[in-house]
Image 1 (cartoon, helix red, strand yellow):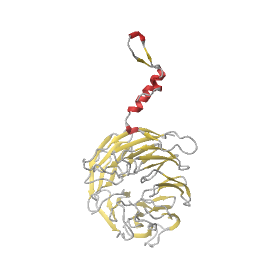
Image 2: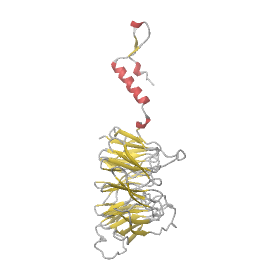
Image 3: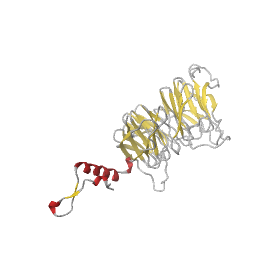
Image 4: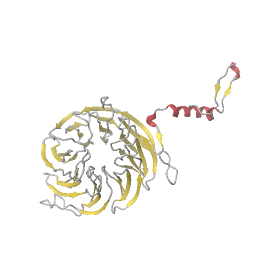
Length: 415
């Protein structure tokens, strides 16, 4: 709609004998801008959530591109995109609930190739030697070439869904399943090397349809389970080393669904409605140095009554945590002392990612939030069609995320 102010300089030109609109340069420019923003696509619409307490914040991003991921069948109108994107050698890789795995050009979002899996893909991909690995909800793990998506091998002897990211170390690829099984396969052939099984004890409550992926560090595999246990296994043979119960909070969901984080000799992990703990790995003998497992978990350095089901982010001396209550926390990573906490939106939050002075978190309630790392002040929010169930990823000053509407976004963060 043209505003009254935009037409202030209009006049009738008498030379033609009929009425005609003629605008001075400044008025014409204003009219052009009004029309541009009135009829532009809502894909790039911006909604400012809060300008902050203190200095005035500018909108901290510019839209770079949007790529539409192919939709599934019409009856899957309520699909949720749980697969988080990852970047490898100037390409973006992401799976979709429609069962396709995509490779896109990082700069433009142009689709390079796609691969049809046996079922919906919720797993985060991992990479090694120009090969990408991921799983699907039919319990199949795939190895594809980075260049053209050619299938090298698949492993389908799991009997359970694969929802989390695998991990690669040496000549093996490791992954877990929803039923608590841990597998080690040959990277070259996909042949099973060993298998470990954790008997889930769910008497304490219910479980979320998700599970932790393995984290490998110094000869040890760290992984969480749906019954609230954080466990360690020996990398070379899958022998159990120790377990730690994190299911101490109130509520029905005790899952340890996030991939643990290791930073400067400390391991961080949390259950959904229990505790967030920091363990001292520096004071624990590694599996390589110890002939037999001792069965004793590392010393607890600190703990907080903060539940979380997603991964953490670290910047400097601060660890950022998306709580299961919708609160974003900043903690001192050495002591666990809260630096700040902020209720962000109304929906569940993704894992946080950090770019310079900004923490980015996506919400299931159709927003992506840009938060000040120093004080938790919300700078702005960005609309995301049908919300975001997956985690964003950051490369430099560009953030990428996949919405439930099947749209893949790239935003440039402005400082």
